[in-house]
Amino acid sequence: MEKFKIEGGRPLAGDITVSGAKNAALPELLCALLTDEELRLSNVPCLRDVKTSLRLLEMMGKRCSFDPERGEVSISGAVTSHVAPYDLVKTMRASILALGPLVSFCGHAEVSLPGGCSIGARPVDLHIRGLQEMGAHIDLDGGYIHAEAVGGRLHGARIVMDKVSVTGTENLMMAACLADGTTVIENAAREPEVVDLADCLRMMGAHIRGDGTATVEVQGVQRLCGGSHRVVADRIETGTYLVAAMATHGVITCHDSCPFALDAVLSKLRSGGAEVTVNGSSITLDMRNREIRPVDITTAPHPGFPTDMQAQFTVLNALACGTGSITETIFENRFMHIPELIRMGARLDIRGNTVICSGPAALKGAQVMATDLRASACLVIAGLAASGTTVVDRIYHMDRGYERIERKIGALGGLIERVGD
Ligand code: EPZ
Image (cartoon, rainbow, N blue to C red):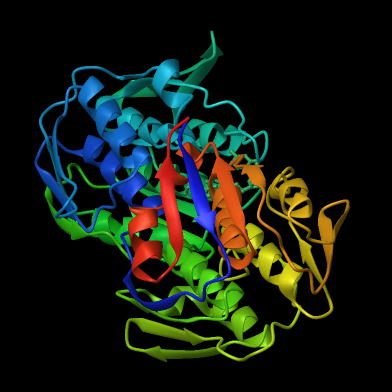
């Protein structure tokens, strides 16, 4: 199993170009199921989950091409299978995003229940209930969701989401595009990736408004066309590199980013003592000769502080001079990086869904194990900030969401190499 070997203690300095957002690319790849015409996506990151999504689309009969160097994807052709099999869905939960488009465009779908993952149970009841309100008949049998649009076509509905769900909002928004009538999604997710998906769907001919707010309204149309869309920049990748530069007292500029999507994160970086300046689509963070101050964070749906940045900020709080706290409100088990950070010398104390961080800790390199995508990013940052050598195991988690990470960190002066068993 591949590992990262990191030599810590060197400030990161330089420029990176931010990749396209994983969590926008995944729904936008699957919205190709809403038309037989060619959908072309650019700025698509070269990630495991992107390749998994393309494999799923091909299993359903789509013709797919991907140029990873240019970040360009083309998807076309008719759907010949309506099944998203367990063996694939178990490797990528976001496969659930095939459900809404398939039921809406083809009238039926069989999608494996994704099951939980290391950060939580990850139910999909809100996806299912919303589709039922739109006229889908749904059976859960043998670990699969069997969905049928009664009468062959979904109809509009007013759906009130019990919880804010990003992919739940995305699935129902996609399904509503071809439904008969108007769908209103209340308590919708407001994440920038939801807005980018809506932009892609509008380009295809969908009538959507209110995306980015808690109320999304979709006027169903008879058909959607193909076309071209550029995937929005990855705000979580951007935040991850900004934290890495801060933790190593370096200076970094992230180009082609989307600062407007990072207000809560930039605010906490400044509170933590960093000098952060925004110039168009570039964000510069300077932490040279500056002291890290502890911050108090509570994760929340956008525009609140993103749960996907919680683990990375735990490293900053471990290094900070003083006591900070981080409260996780979205997922029930997103502290698995904590024991690994403690093994590196961090002083962290979990109390329910809050971790109290007492710094400053002089982190020391160690052998650590990644458990999920953002936990692996946190351990890489800790290794870069620690003295000595850190070996991060199970880095396949990292490859799901960070494009060419060792090349980007190496270009910033970090010493990181991918090693086999
Ligand atoms: C999306 O996951 C992201 N994934 C996650 O990013 C991100 O952490 C999460 O949103 C929150 O921002 C993608 O976009 C592919 P949710 P998603 O539905 O949609 C509960 C990463 O690291 N819930 O917004 O699966 C759920 O248990 C990944 O890039 C239900 O109860 O998350 C959670 O407590 C990790 N029933 C809360 O809602 C449902 O039907 C928010 O989950 C759906 C969700």
